Image 1 (tube, helix red, strand yellow):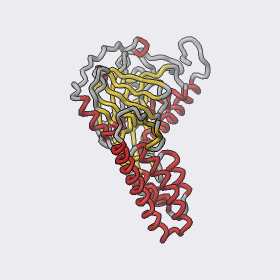
Image 2 (tube, helix red, strand yellow):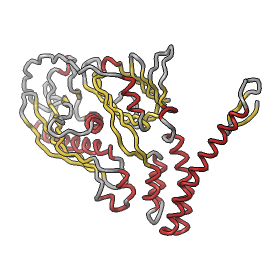
Image 3 (spheres, one colour):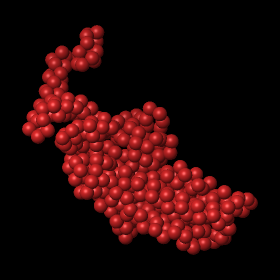
Amino acid sequence: MIPDMQGARFDKTKPVRREKLLVMQTRMDAQASQKRRSVAEVALVCSSNIGKSAALLLHVCGLALCATSASVWGQSADSTALVVRTSTGIVWKSDQAKYRIGLSGIEPKASGTLTLSPTELVFSTSKGRVSIERNRIFAVTVGGERKETGGIAAWATRMALPFGGGAILATMTQAQVDLLTVEFRDEHDSYHGAVFILPKTEALHFQEKYGPIAPESRVERPKSPCASKRGRPSSLEIATIDSTELSIPTEYRVLLYEQLVRRLQETSDYEKIYREGDSSAAATCPELLIQVKSTGFNKGNAVFRATTGPVGVFVGVTSLQVHLELSDSVGKKLMDEDLKASERGDSDSLDVADEVAKSVAKELKKQREVFIGQYPTTGPGRGM
């Protein structure tokens, strides 16, 4: 065996041309040299403003972060989004998918492989695998966002750099990415949505390979009138986000819904939490209904916030405003509130959906305390 190509090993007996390997090695060296020159030029510019010591720190950290970023996001779409047709039936695949939220059994923000076959969409990590049958998917949407590509290490390094060096480094560690949003129904017709972050252009490739999707056709199950229940409510239904009056990007609408489900499940204030469309017998008459309507949205600019230092607290802000309504089983309105959340400074714009979800959960907890005050004891027919 002959060691070569940065630790790779090749067998002499295999018909591998030495000249081809040398050409590949030369190209890799040239690419690495170009990255080092780019970072060195930035560090040189910085030296006139932030001093030689800060420029040296930026140079060292920048080299490490650029290497990390290139290994994760710097490859071309052709190298990460595999479009193949084999006996396995795989028609599209990305091994650089970052899952945001929306799949049961997978930890939010996990990295893994997203695979599309003629029958299902699968997301797999080292800890698990979740599949969605294609006949349950009713919408696929592609969006875009500028994201931090260096992970926590890049963010921490920017925070540590003095004299504005972090703002300069942010221009190198943030890049345009694709957002792929998949909306689907489970076996009970309950609504779900999942959001994935992919390298640039990969979501478009996915959409092309997926093909056209027939409009969702659902037959609403007739519901019997629900009787008013006395006592602490123990069940609630979360309606899908209403964006008819003010349209917001699909990824933000789905993120808000899924984060709201997650936050309310974490509170354990209710025994049963139902998604919109749930046709199971138990979901026939939830005691409470939550309706959230988008009323204001500003996408902002995460890169601008990260590269302008303290100014980023006031400009490029991402904000989301909603109207919250809570009603009981007979339609009586119990809550009518306007809520707003913002992402400022060096932060992830997509997190604004979770901030709104936390605000909604907080307001619902206050209302829950009102119920407890009205019905201080539990018992048969009195909920929790």
